[in-house]
Length: 138
Image 1 (cartoon, rainbow, N blue to C red):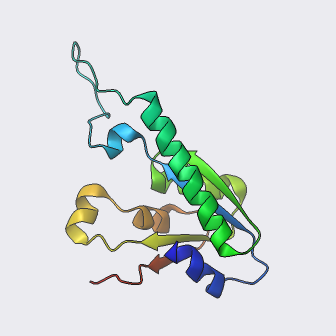
Image 2 (spheres, rainbow, N blue to C red):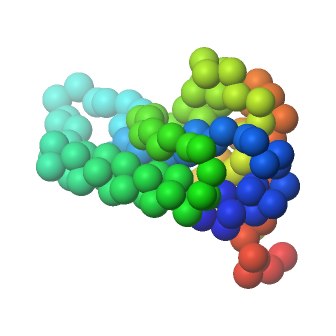
């Protein structure tokens, strides 16, 4: 929300916004190993209701952010790895700029978990505006 609000101050008044919220696969978000499987060992599964709840929460969040912009905007939900998915949506839809927030995870956490803003910054098909959180400390 901070990044969206700040973008209104920085981008042209006639900008048209697409608010993209990405639902990360819940198995990964919950810390489950989903990148490989072992023969004879069942993989944990995420109930369909949890996936549906996550998608519904993401839709509400995207719509709330779009309304808060008070500018022409659409809200959409995509599924997948957040950084890669944001870049793919931007490429497919021909975005002129991507605005992404930064939570300031710190070096260690970023190395272990990755950073959406870092990935987008280095892989986006267009310019990227990274907005640091208002209360972020280094």
